[in-house]
Length: 204
Image 1 (cartoon, rainbow, N blue to C red):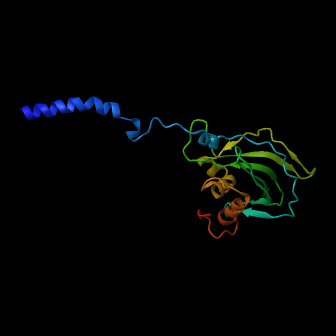
Image 2: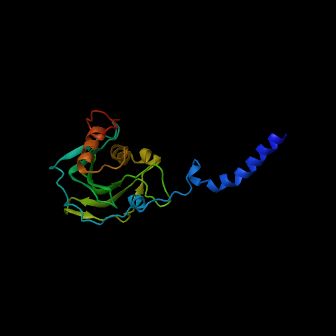
C-alpha cells in the first residue's frame, strides 16, 4: 500500500513538470506554424499589363493543332511563336488561339491561362482560370478588347461546357505551372497535339 502511495505521489509531482514542457510542436498539427514571407509571396497573383502581340497571319507561322475530340467540329490552333510565360507574381501563360470553323473562318483570341500553385486553396489564393485579352479583327488587322475581361475559373464544369479550354488546361497545368516556353510547347505537343504520342502522359 505504501509503495502504491509513493507511486501515485510521484505521478502527481511529475504532472506539472510535464505540462510545463508540453509544446504544440508535439501535436500532430503544428498550430504555431507561421508562413514565411517567401511562401506568402509565392502564392500572390498580380496580373501584369502588357501589349498584345501583332495580329498574326493565320496562313503563316508555327501553329500547333490542339486535339479536343473527334466530334469537336472545329480546328483549334495555338501559335507557338506567341507563347509567353509571364514573370512572378503573374506567372500566367499567354498565347494566341485560333478556332477555325468547319467553313474555314478564323476566330482569333489573345488569351492567358493561370495554373493554380496547388490543389489546396488558401483564403485568397487565385484558382486556375483563363482570360481573353482580345478578339482578333482580321478585316481591320487589330485586336478588340472584350467587354467582359475577367478571369474565368476552370473547374469540373468547364470540361463539359468548354472542352477546348479544358483540354488546354489539362495539358499545361496537370503537373503544376510550366516554368518556361519550351516546357509549354513540349506539354502541348505531348499531351494535346493532334497527333500526340499519348493523350494521357504526365511525365513531361
